[in-house]
Length: 371
Ligand code: F0G
Image (cartoon, rainbow, N blue to C red; front, side, top):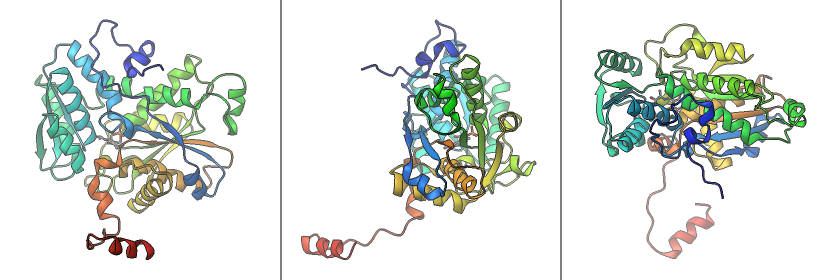
């Protein structure tokens, strides 16, 4: 059995890290790409849908791919303190990798607006948590100023090493799809090379990840390791959709707190990824996000956090309006684990019934009534 070594060792020749730089890794990456036949049946088109389970990373989100690179580089450069703004997942990942590297970690978060699991992670890993009376966009401008003043190394996705790490998810998707493809990528597969899916559906918040995937797909194709490029389909939450609207949103609102962002730092490169790939950036409502969230959990056994489900909700929308067609293959990136946000899971479901007596009769009666 070949052991997975983390994204830096697995893809070193495709990342420009110095060979002798220290590697801070939790053996991130190598996440499952799984078929979603029940979800696909709900779409009403005969498309091949795969889910990239980024919630299977060590801290439960895709951020770990970028963080292994950014923290390794910070350590190589002699940093002592790292800082980030976060809607939750970046702070959890930064806190874990900083702990592993022996660095101090400061995380600036919108007060009361990050999911409980993520806050628990940052605290557990010993980060210094600074809640502000303001949103993510404000937090990002503050930490940028702190970094510019030389107080700490910034590990948000405006740090290019984050993008370097996160692009490896695109490599994995091509490698995992391998050969024997159905759909319009079949010709490429027949020629012997692995290929990208027809569509890559991905949530968009601060827009680093869509930027990273597009970079990864292009680099893999340029090296002859992928015979095709996907069309990039980015999805923002309707209440936080600045790129779709073409202007910043001052007070972004959505149940998908991870992507509650009104002025994304990587706006231009996200726009370019969509345009250059022949794709688009669209929005999905909170109701559509929750519908996808329930469908994935209850028909596929996949528990992804609400922001993640913007990609799956996007596929439902694409199937409805004819953008996703029979015979095509689409990958939805599920960016974070559902366990990150237990409150949404509980608040959006019928209440658990009151306790019954601790005897077999009471339980049998409920089973016979279908609980
Ligand atoms: N999905 C999840 C679960 C996220 O946590 C994020 C971003 C995104 C999607 C969007 O990715 O920002 O690269 O477009 N979370 C950041 C954070 C902002 O602070 O954890 P993006």
